[in-house]
Image (tube, rainbow, N blue to C red):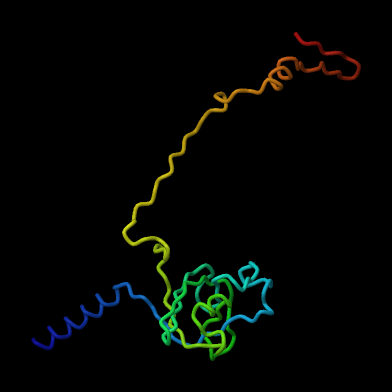
Length: 174
């Protein structure tokens, strides 16, 4: 009987633990883009700029925000996935030069980093206490409410359709 209770408790704990939201964190080496790539197109179609906070990752979809942390000095940056790579098994992420400068590994060329995917509904620049999103007040106005300019009023009133001619017959207005 005790064995059945133990198995039941282990099964329930496994089921509940699998449904908890977990922040996936990966660790590995990061490198940064060369200055030669400045201005070239990336995989998502945009041009690379060395001062932007972007990165290349093999698995995350384009537009995903990642928090990259340097465990040696504790510095971290938030970057957006805009490219595919790195194509070397030694590195797990390629960062832009600005992101590498913020993390402090420009001289070394590579660094051990921790990568955490940010939740899509959480913005890193929004204060934690502010949860209200303002609603837009949109109104529809009929076009009749807007005045017609004077120069258009005269031309609309004086314009009359011309009579149509069909093979020599003149069709007059009735």
